[in-house]
Length: 426
Image (cartoon, rainbow, N blue to C red; front, top):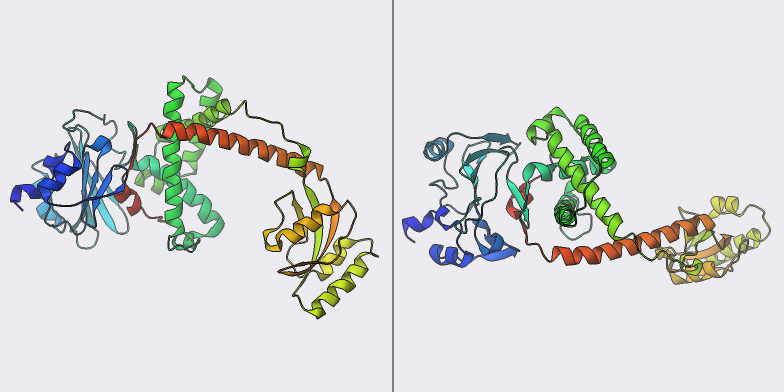
């Protein structure tokens, strides 16, 4: 490989196959528009043209502006000073220090190990490629590009607003240790699962916002006032540390809330004509009380039979259930196809056949023996709620079809290296 082929900035604006030929590498497409040489290089190529190059830990034979992974800070600074006029920002985490340099529609991110000050990653973006398609740069504190949704850019600090909100919600309920838990048993941490959901949510919001503008949908004065109020309250709730670290401003939070409120408005507008006719039969909900005696032996069956005889004589079935059931729960409200999964179809069938005030015979499930008392064979309040849920589900399905058509029009590129490197930190 020639010395010149090691310098990768010259490939900005080229097609990926040109890069492969010139560097004698074979890249794999990790996601749409994202190409990688494992542990070595990542390219972002919207429209098939390279706009970003990232050097990773095993890329020591390649350079960006003469910088290479493993280079010390003193040597790197001397090289950078010849191209850029000092750094524009610095971000410090518990693991590394990231310096940002800006000039002429280009961004250079140089990440150093916090302990030995050697480069561990280099990312270079050029927003005016050889295709002469320029992406405006407005704010030097936006941080690294996280995603491109069509022509819309999502930068680090906007993505962190969503991620920090989610972090606060989950840690408040489950504690700070939740992020490393393999909650679904698929060797994927809960933190990664949530990050996938967050970037999907951001992508959807950007598509919907773009379509709202296309349809001429705007927020009215009252809605804009609400946006300002929500954003102000959000900013007041953030720590000075997070505001400084993620460069969060009132303008940024207002943009986030505008996007979300506009998406809600589009959803309401496009699903207003959904079919709201839901029959009582479709939505009917019943409420029952249950006594469970665990086990399927004769002793358990005899115990359950004795309780059934008592149940037929007592006035307070619930008190009898409280004193004798071996389950944590006594009351169940459900409709057809919604019975307790752990008890199976036999339980649901028996419950649905009862009239108000009736007691079932002994019902056998995998959990044991059941005695079911029907509190109501038509729970009106629960049925009304179920009708509302059915209508809302229809609206969701209607909007999902519309969004599927919309999303097919947009090229979405996620900077997976940058996004995956973000950790849930204190």
